[in-house]
Amino acid sequence: MAESLITEEVRALIGQETEPERNRFPISDEMAFDVADSIQDPNPLYVDAGYAGRSRFGGLLCPPLATWKDIGPPIGYFGAGQDWHFEVPLPFNSYGLNGGSDWQFLSPSYVGLWITRRFRILDIYEKQGRSGPLVFVVRQEIQTGEDGQVVNQAERVSIHRALPAGEEPMEAANVRDDLVTVDVSPPSPAEVFTRPDPSPAPQYYYEDVSVGMELPPVVKGPLTTTHLVRWAAANGNYARIHWDLPFAQLRQGLANVVVNGSLKNQYLGQLMNGFAGDEGWFKRFYVEHRGMDFPGDVITASGIVTGKEERDGYGHVHCEVALRNSRGGQTASGRGTVVMPKRGQTLPLIWEAED
Picture 1 (cartoon, rainbow, N blue to C red):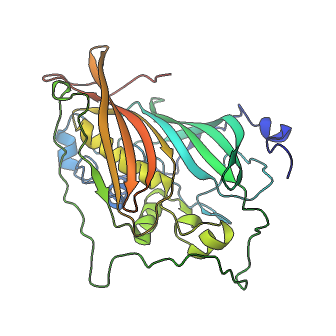
Picture 2: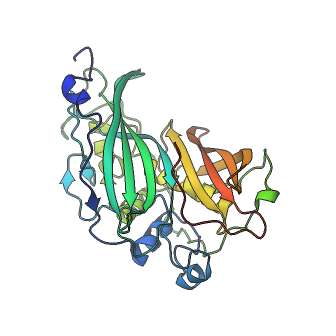
């Protein structure tokens, strides 16, 4: 392998931007329902048109971290919905793991909104990982509505890793004796998971919040491969490492199929949105993924208030968040900002981007 994986050809991609791409369909009430149902988020703003119409938003919303759906994605080696907007020529064939994201939410993601997105590569760099070299690709994504208003923007990091030295993709006929036995994930034959009934989160006001206050936790699981496939169906991304066990183990060197980074983002997003409440605004969210979760795990999203400040007349509340599984691992961490209304105050629906 070359001394540096960042060749001049790779480096030349930095700064390139895609043409704007409008989604095939507008956000629909079915899409909003499917996303909320797949992540088991009981927020009635996503599923109850009457409730949403009476809210300050005046209409149904889609969960803000899931405003784009891949429609009819092509099926390739890594699955469906993994087509890249930039082809990064690396010397190994590795799936791009979700390294983290920095989101800003700037206007409501209404049902009926046509979303247009564009990407720009901000950076490509390499590091040495425990199992070998890693390449990090940092992309900016901006999503706008048909009126040109930015709905959200994010900086996303994908991590590409080489397979362990000497380990080539295996044919099905080959047998490996170093694979760990994977337990069949729940539920049992007699168990059916129930859906939570739609219910609004309690409303906190800026005056109620203090540093050190814990956010009401969000608990998911035990997770199953069905949860992963339902999430894939809701957002149109069928990456094989999330449902194809032979591919995950033999082709990508993973212990098991893994819980989607994007699904874990949703659980943390539900934590922050629930804390903001219907009258608040989930404004910014940064998360890093530091470990893997598997079917059978129970995942808990938790958070704590680390600071509060008034800015332009509005109360901003800063939080540290984390995701832990029932095996004792912390697999994601980050921070977020929600804007809390003061009593008697109504927050705007349009926000300016921050640096």
